[in-house]
Image (cartoon, rainbow, N blue to C red; front, side):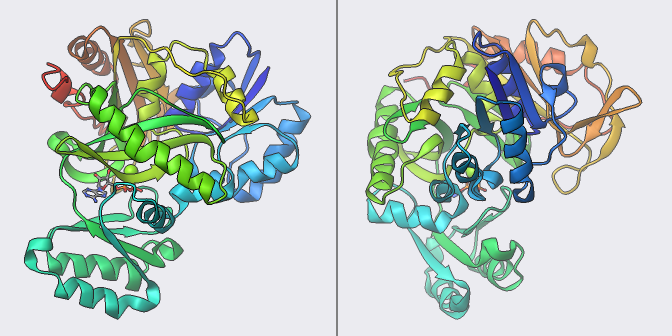
Length: 433
Ligand SMILES: Nc1ncnc2c1ncn2[C@@H]1O[C@H](COP(=O)(O)OP(=O)(O)O)[C@@H](O)[C@H]1O
Ligand SMILES: [Mg+2]
């Protein structure tokens, strides 16, 4: 078989790595990929924006690609799956209409409210309702704050603003509805309750009819240790999540994931691909924060190394609408993923800083996934915010952390930043239930 992966980050490197281990697969192509991915797959020089959908489908046709897998959300929301389907090309991911679950937070909030799926209580305002939204915030008692303001559309993980006070909330409202910081993605806004607790992500394989959850992961969005500083694309992750025992998992599935899947069906949407639930566990009860319509980055890098099954038949079956597996096999091992970011990230990012020490990393113990890298005169160099991800899988989080953090020290580039506390909170697994 020939498989094509679309994207250029650590998630796609990990997908290409897992896919290339399949006995069914002869060749893996990645568009556009990155220099790290080029070490394990054929990178194709085609960007994956909407204007290139024809180029991508032409490539898939000419190369007789058997399956295409879409990494990031934007092409899914732009309808790449519909485009490939029209040309009878097999592709893993939701169609445009189904990808709305990530493409519009208002769509999802409406769905959760209509079908009683636990999520933060929220109100929706459209652009013309600025005065009404402001009055709503002004009339709320002080005790109702903090509030969370969310731009409706895709905003590269930057469209959620947490307002501790009324005045911050009004500034956030202005940012979204008046200053148009998120463009058309901010034509609608959700103002919702702030939920306390801990977060986790659940990625589920979907074939349009059936749904098969994967083991959970937790990611770290903030740039600095102790969850301080600005939000990023994700600075690390670990899997599984020991705080989520059987009881909470059952609530996640029975109260959130399955009802959502049924709600989508009732709305006439057959969801295929990955349904990714972003959850907040508050006093033992899970709430939905958001859905994503694709593999998470960097959750994928922590989850897939623990999956003992060949992923390729699972992806094909989902794309065919015929998922046969009813159970996945997981390693008991724990995995930890730490991202190294470039100087200035997330406000800015540096490019062209030479990376050294990659050849010293013990790849028997630690996987190395490239994200923002490029080749300069034969050397790897930084090329964006998140540069590399290291993943170690071991019999305990403590061991995995110890190996990973000694390996990561071998990697050097100007201004390197990484968090030292990834999976620290689960090191003793004292919350296991
Ligand atoms: N209702 C909420 N209460 C508390 N924190 C929230 C809430 N909604 C979102 N957040 C925080 O903001 C982050 C981003 O929100 P999310 O809905 O996942 O949007 P996106 O990933 O598109 O930026 C979450 O990971 C969480 O930390
Ligand atoms: Mg999120």
